[in-house]
Image (cartoon, rainbow, N blue to C red; front, side, top):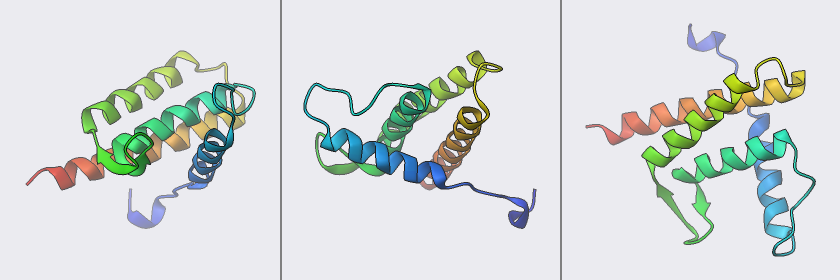
Length: 116
């Protein structure tokens, strides 16, 4: 596939940022909103983004990389995709596909950077 043929839907990043803000503004011990599939997948995507060094670790407030953990989370999302096939709404499936595509792309880029 040529570079011009690639279409990257970055709307999931906005969703991740909204979820991050919701998590930060929610009272301690209470959910930010009613849990649903999108919320669950977005939460996993946030964790993967932290492990990829794209978001600050909320504990240390620093960007840190943990590529093995990022791979585990991405693989977990991929497993959920396979296990939920045929049971998702069109919107849920599109979001899941976009998140996986972006995370896998970012993981590959990070691996390229890490290798001499």
